[in-house]
Image 1 (tube, rainbow, N blue to C red):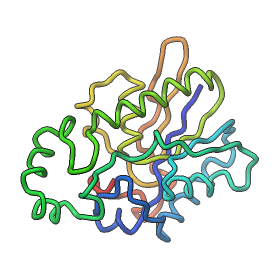
Image 2: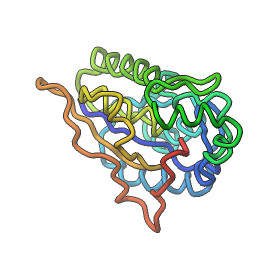
Image 3: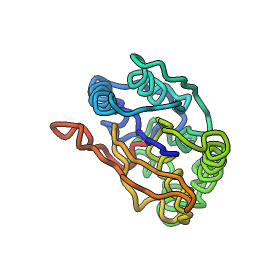
Image 4: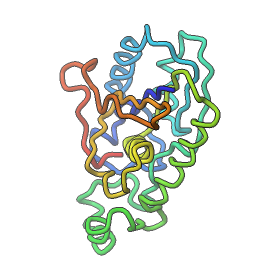
Length: 211
């Protein structure tokens, strides 16, 4: 089995470095262009099934990739970004002003801290790990396209490689990027991470905090 991991295209909130989480802003024009470039790159790649987060920036990205191909695809809420609760829609600077204590706790203990009405990074890893186990059972071979978010994709890579939650923030996954995991008798291998070679003029560059 090979997993093609795609981060959704850019939204205005990405461009403004706002926490998105479970909020649902659409792709902007740059985001659509990023995904069209990736779709062109993947045109000759066989894909047996596609899964996307049920948030529109992800499932719209998946639709652009599969729209001209007869590929079964569905949405799965386990692929959602981490919920940032009351931080969603705010920039880091705004969160620091409005929730200073919580923000300092998040910077010091990123894996365990829960933003107000949000979820912890550990919670995110638990649900994407469950999704990964589902894939191994139901898609033991073939190519699976997964279109999701920076946080949930990093969580999938950590889960596949048996890496601790603390490794999560050491990876970068840009908008419109492609990462690849392969699964065989020896478990998972990371073949590619955050490949944006199909993007031009800096299209693949986004802020780390704008998830």
